[in-house]
Amino acid sequence: MLDEFTHVPRVAYFSMEIALRNEIHTYAGGLGILAGDTVRSAVDLKLPMVAVSLVSRAGYFHQQIDNQGRQVEQAAFWEIQHWAHALDAKIAVPIDGRTVWVGAWLYVIEGHMGGRQPVLLLDTDLDENQPGDREITHYLYGGDETYRLKQEIVLGIGGVRLLQALGFTVRHYHMNEGHSALLGLELLRRYAYPAEDVRQGESPYDVPRVRDLCSFTTHTPIEAGHDRFPYDLVRRVLDNGFDIETIKRLAGEDSLNMTRLALNLSEYVNGVAKKHAEVSNAMFPGYLVHAITNGVHPFTWATEGFRQLYDHYLPGWCHEPQLLMRADCCIPETAIWEAHVQAKQHLIEKVQALTGVSLQPDIPILGFARRMTAYKRPDLLFSDLERLQEIARSHPFQIVLAGKAHPRDEHGKQLIEQLHAHARTLSGTVPVVYLPDYDMALAQLLTSGVDVWLNTPLPPLEASGTSGMKAAFNGVPNLSVLDGWWIEGCIEGVTGWAIGNLAGMPNDNARLLYDKLEQVLLPLYFNEDRSGWIKVMKGAISKNASYFNSHRMMLRYATEAYSR
Ligand SMILES: *Cc1c(COP(=O)(O)O)cnc(C)c1O
Image (cartoon, rainbow, N blue to C red; front, side, top):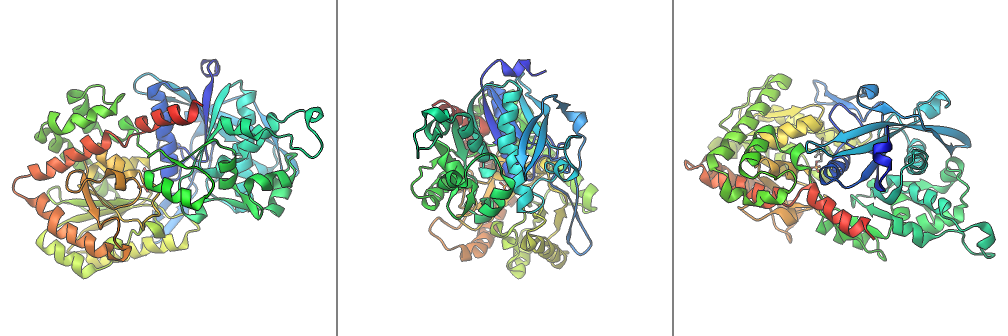
């Protein structure tokens, strides 16, 4: 079954989560979407890869919202055998003093242009394992730190062993975030000098060789995004024949810091936007963090109407999204507007079905959907409800929101409740709907169906952000704080609009957001001559979608990270 993939050397791409399709619950949010888009671009570009992730049988979670506006979480089991094939191979990893067997499922990504790439989903739910160990690969980002460490042993160490057992030749390892950094320890062990060649007091480990094989992408400046495990836990759970002193030299004296381990074992390290690389270089003095700005997968994120439009006017765009730079001159305004009206109609129907609320097709919709957490400031738009209502009285608008909060992010969950309270307060002047259970399918509907994509993170905490890029593929302009990718993507009034400037104070952001909405966006939208608005839609496609796509991103990984 694997012969088709094992005969050529591949880049092994390790990620704790990966968004393969909506029915497969192996992702939580942006990191997983990026992993999926990465491999989808490798498929289209015929760049040999093998992705390694966890099977996450119970998914992340399904979100419901109760009538108080509170998030209710439910396990999100999925039909593995329907989508993936069980592979015969199993390997053993020592965890907690026991032998834990790890098997895998094969999912094949098939591109619409003929490419195919394998994804291995690691699974410990095997008869050989005792009940607790069978659940190690069940809950994505679930459990406590012991559970997380076990998952990361399965991913990093189990993943490397399984690739070998299945007959893959790996020419390079890419760690998508630090969760998989234990793979570096496994490679050190594999390529260690034989004991008889090692002089007394010298290390048997060939660190330069392993570094040459590995690349690492760091994804966030937020401290909680960097896993650290206390060494007493590590001693107990991670019993892989390594002495703790060796691990401490590579992963930090105080605790096992997965980011530090990945930094020390990767020759190529990068952040996910130019600004994020700068911030990361300041966070990790002594390391060189390059910048490869994220992108999204063209075919996946352009909605049907826009795909048809691009196919007709810019054939080949799926393979070479640079062609979209001609969208401003080569696609008629009416065709852009019609494709947008169609996408907006699909969203309006979905909103009606999910909430019973009828949004108006001729009134602009502002969209905000992403993980609900403090630094993303989903409440910024609602900081002054009086002002918001006053703006709506001269130029009406509607708001669509969505997003899950991590089950242990209490503040994130409070934000969801507050947003519901604001929606009640505004009812009558500004329709506000909150769509539950934000996922890949809703993201496709939202980023294509709204008129403006709003983003209000607290700088510099949004490493890149990718949902705004999805919007650009559908001609939806961004209105965003200058952070992450938008610092590179924003040309004021041409591709969208900035909230504030680079030197400004984040405290001013709410006022500047209202000013821009009132004085610039809404008057332009309601102008009798719609061509001014459509020009910005075209700017988003021609200047943003043509660049912020995962094909460009992958070509850079291939030339700068993978081929050393
Ligand atoms: C794209 C996407 C994200 C990431 O959105 P950001 O704007 O980068 O935070 C999160 N969740 C889902 C379901 C997505 O499709």
